[in-house]
Amino acid sequence: MTLSRRRLLLGTAAGAVAAATATAGATVACSSGDRQISIAAGEPDGFYIEFANLLKPLLHARVVPTLGSVQNIRAVDAGTADLALALADALDAARIGAPDFGSAVKLSALGRVYENYMQLVVRADSPVWSLPDLAGRVVSLGASGSGAALFGERLFATAGVVLGQSRHLALKDAVAALRDNEIDAMLWSGGVPTPVLAEADQQWGIRLIDLGGYVPDLRARYGRYYNEIALPVGTYRAAGAVRTVGVPNLLVTGSRTPDSAVRRTVRVLVEHAGQLVPSQARGTQYLDVGNLINTEPLPLHPAAAATYRALRG
Image (cartoon, rainbow, N blue to C red):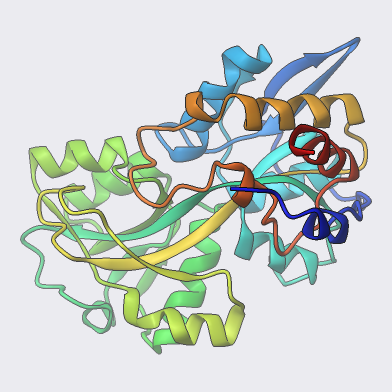
């Protein structure tokens, strides 16, 4: 796909980093001259960690987990991480200073990498077959600081479904709680198939609740970052033709990151795209030049825009 020069030029304004206190310092580190840069990643066994591990040999990186998008954005904003992976809806919420962030966060993007699948999971033998069936029940909406947690609050508010209790469990803890009937459902944002969920499916069986019908209302209330996507048939045993919500994720940075590190990272994204396809990326693919520069709601970092331009002419 050819690169639009006009779109690149429109997206070259860089964000400045606002002072804040980070809640996490988990990082992926790589060397850039005498300075080490860091990127906030995600939960163990999740999509972000898998993607970071593919970057690791290419950037001579050290990979350490975080809890997800919201925490990652705060870390970059505070300067405790140079780069981060984050969902577009969380980045938009940060940009406008939504309650999860307090004040507006100014970041810029290096590229749009993949699309996360929002997966609302129940046991295969559950009586729950739709979102309204969860009214009054116990649901894990994702770990605190994750993009799933932010999305989960929006999803149930949009659907008008009041839970009996919402919990915020990390992925493995949520899967164990679902297995033991301590919760009725769990929400996870990641690639497909997510290995921990695939293992649970083989051992005791899971189903995903269809969320596709909520996309128009989510887009109307919160922005156009939500897409209706079909779960690839065979992802999990009972997947069938389940529709869910897709949210693009971006690789982002602040103004403290050296331009040399930005340029190097962009070159890796473009020149090694074929090596950067996680096993959890069975569905919609975004790691190509045409989509890398599609970084709404953030502008491209100037050094990133210049590198794309130089690589593509």
